[in-house]
Image (tube, rainbow, N blue to C red; front, top):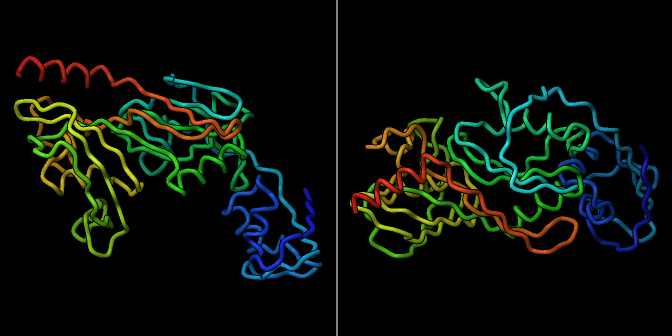
Length: 302
């Protein structure tokens, strides 16, 4: 499919100009099209850094998205909300978001493929589930899926610009003394174990806010908000300050008296602007049954 645009605002980089002219194209797609010489300016191939001029004619060729190789699977999903643009899902603990080594099937992506069928984002040149963010396999809770390119780009940009608010609940070992605190420590790949993340001077900026909801005899229930979205951020930060999440085998030696497998971390709430209405929306995911049962046991201990 060929598209053509006439530039009105000069002095802007070609890639940025295209992003402004075509809201249906992601930054990743624009970069790919320019690299593949599928974007021409006045019949000439230009670099992404080319500064466009008024009345420049930009032409580009966008291929129709290919069918995904991802296998649709009929898997039950806990759907909190759905419309023509988005699906909000309460992901179960133990479910992987995307297929990968060791998890080729049974993922959230496989389930969404079966549920949505033809109504999916085609960003990246392949029809695939528009999962705009992810949570760890053993973290349960709310996750957004975009059903079309417009919604995918809109919500991805909100996440990049830190305009979404994600709230988690975490049960940790130990009694957190401060009622509220901010953890500001950079996170990068661990030098001791490349499969893990760690607080490191060469890591990327990472900020986590915590608030005590309830103190028990040997544990604390925390509300956690993150400003950044680093891999394993909450788990690494809480372990670093001496309050590892119960059941987190990677960052707490797996010690827990409840015998749970995987961290007791739940993506409880998410707030963002709806991609079509631009109105602020908020969705809450109920705690898993095992989580509420353990909290009831802790109440009994108190």
